[in-house]
Amino acid sequence: MSPKPPVWAYSLPTALLLMAPFDILASMAMDIYLPIVPAMPGILGTSSAIVQLTLSLYVVMLGLGQIIFGPISDRIGRRPVLISGAILFAAASFCLAASSSAAPFVTLRFLQAVGASAALVATFATVRDVYADRPESVIIYSLFSSMLAFVPALGPIAGALLADRYGWRSIFATLGALAVLAVLHAVLRWHETRPKGAAMSHYSFLPVLRSLAFWTYTLGFSAAMGTFFVFFSTAPRVLIDRAGFSELEFSFAFATAAVVMIITTRFAKRFVARWGNAGTLLRGMVMLLVGAGLLSIGQVFGPPSFWTFLAPVWVMAIGIVFTVSVTANGALEKFGDIAGSAVALHFCVQSLIVSIGGTTAVIRLQGDTAWPLATFSAIMAIVVLTALGWLRYRSPSQT
Image (tube, rainbow, N blue to C red; front, side, top):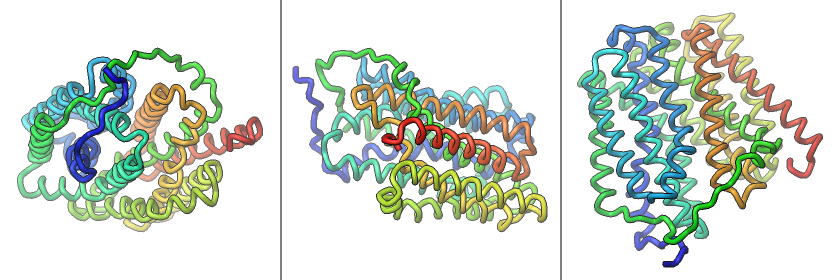
């Protein structure tokens, strides 16, 4: 059997229609839930910290899944990992809709994240199998990145509308129903793409862990994604509980940050071409610091409002886009021969920093204020700028 990856007979639009739902659902499960977060402690009879755990577990499992399900899909194939993960996601979503207490709810959110992680890993592994050396890969990755910016704009709005009309349980029932449709489509049309006869390779993570460039850009990625994580963890409490927004008003306000990210993404290639990886990362961190400073000023001198909380986040959203545009290339540039291991480690480290650091900031600081977001972003930006300066001093050619 040839080890060459198979070429799908599907056109690009057909392939995207097959793959994109799993990417969208994995992201939507984080964002569609946000409008009801302030109400969940009362619904489940628990604390805000436990509800925060349902957000953190989801994020950390998506990252850890890169380590767990990547090797599994290499051994048994992409299709079984994708189908099994999507079925688990759907089942957990339906059970979440029927849940009424904290312990089962937390457990089911974890299982939902396990399913999402497996499906997501299998999806991206399939893209690598089929399109690695083809020009369509650029289009696919660009569209997937755009979806990750676009879904946060629509997810909370959809969640607010569903909760208002049908109750909070309808949010999770909808996720389950959409997953079932995606699974049925995949069962019929998603054939195996793992290279047949390919030998299993065992690479060490040590060369990656010893790389200063890897850590600098991975910390930058963690700063960007952690900023967004802390934002969506605190925004419902700040804007709904403190500023008095309705769930629908909150959803539209939240969407403005995603719109800023989408617009900035449109011009990101020009910025990277002009500034390079290091210059773009530096500017991304500066934007996070500026946003953190504006948040602090608003927190001290004014009550929570659209302008004191959301407008500074727009500045940070620009920094997030600058940063994520270069962090993967910067972190993985020297590891073409062990790209799979490096990618897995890159996402795993990021998820751990985001979930542990971001959750600590939300719980230890006042989660219904701007302080968790301002503090996390400022600290991470300073750490990354320090590492970037050290990288430039040690290895000018890598910046």
